[in-house]
Length: 72
Image (cartoon, rainbow, N blue to C red):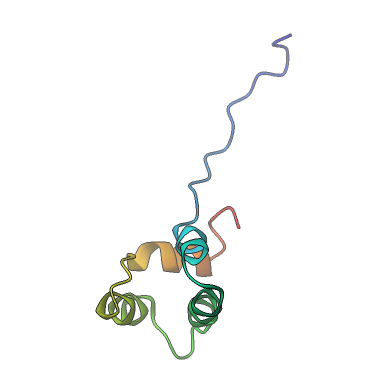
């Protein structure tokens, strides 16, 4: 029963995706486009712009999502 017991790789939930799921469809699309647009938006600049609009997220999850280090 326990022959192949191994620890599972830790994959934290993606805060960007969690945030997008709480937004209206159009806002979620805008968010995801901004996250993917590394030419226009640095992670900190995007975080600051979102916070000015009352959307709270750190720059670290944005960068993690961009680097494909999340479970997306």
